[in-house]
Amino acid sequence: MTAGKRIGDYTVDTKLGSGRYGVCFLARDSHGEKVVLKRFRRRLFQKNPPGSHHEAVILSGLDHPSIPELLGVVHEREGYFFVLKYMPGHTLRQLLFREHHIFTEEDIFRIGAQLSEALVYIHSRSVVHGDLSISNIVDDGHRTGLLDFGLARYR
Image (cartoon, rainbow, N blue to C red; front, side, top):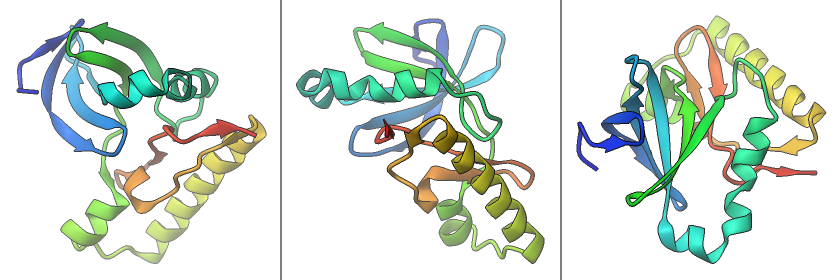
């Protein structure tokens, strides 16, 4: 998808990344605020529609600063998209392997504490993330976020 492409009320800026189930784009709403558009691969969505909805249902019931807020859903000719609040920063994978970032002891404690708080919160809501990895943890130097609830389930 090219920069400037309109999806619903959003304008695509760039591709953020892709995985087995879909691809994420950085976009802006009509006020210029950054959002993430997560598009599902059509074949997977058509084969397993009920499983594809778990992420939206789970995210709609969560409210925590380390978890992206589900802002809406867009269904267009180009596909089916979740609209998520943008969480700034880089994934731990990017920080470690692309940026060669050296984490301080304070960074490690802050990231660990914030990630632990997020996990305690989702577990208190009977949610299991199902895909904890350095690719699904984002950090901007102040706030650590837990991304990609595509494999999350209620326990």
